[in-house]
Image (cartoon, one colour):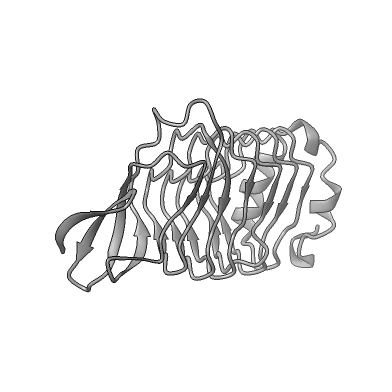
Length: 219
């Protein structure tokens, strides 16, 4: 349960009964936004919904999460047209639904090895992301619409832990030309992936994917 709300420097935050803090707002104007590891002695374990929609219109910004961050809440940075680069900390486990949806200037993001879940539409319409390197993560599924409409995405690297790809995970990623098929994928997920691939002009002949289909699925 939330105990109180407070402010420290450029950050607003909420304190919870387990003596942790979640960032709830940002009042600064820096181009490079570094979220704190702690605020007033409380470890910052999460980033809540922060309204960047009407700010930073004239410049591109970089966002870096603090070392104690475990999760990024749903819609935390959605419609933040100014974010160009995101640096995520090792220790982060969850990016919730629509966290970076419509961040159309985002060109660079890392996915840490501790990441276990990305919610539906978390990166929907992030048009300028070119490479999605998820290979070091612990993801078991790619959620519905997670990377849909990422128009410039050319390459996707999935971890071998992925066993499920949900509806329209890569839908209309029209530049996608290279994606691997984890051996743990169910046949239903392979069919769903194929539905995405064959709506993508660059994947008319998806040789890189075909070469990685588990032998049990090759007829």
